[in-house]
Amino acid sequence: MTARVLCVGECMAELSGGEAGGYRLGFGGDTLNTALYMARLLETGQVGYVTRLGDDVYSARMRAAWEAEGIDCSLVETVIGATVGFCAIDTDAAGERSFTYWRG
Image 1 (tube, rainbow, N blue to C red):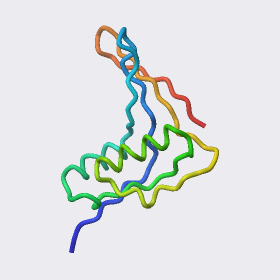
Image 2 (image 1 turned 90 degrees about the horizontal axis):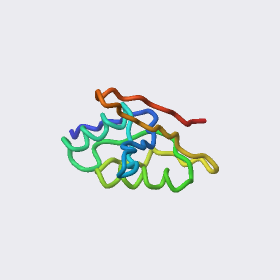
Image 3 (image 1 turned 180 degrees about the vertical axis):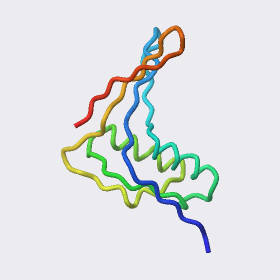
């Protein structure tokens, strides 16, 4: 029998950096990080993510990034008119991170 892992939760689009090089777009959150690490350990398609995304460009980029990592997105629901939450991460000179959230 083959193992199957399902991670359930919310992923956010993350803007990090912000210095002279500008912000970088990434995706993160506890449940996504777990899914990514498990997908890298197991065979492609053995890890699935259960969540809801919008029909905006960032939701599409998020889903494509997960699929590129081998995560099964068949249980990801698309909500027409919705978007994903955003988080900006800034790091001070001492390395302390601060977060600003935009979510509905």
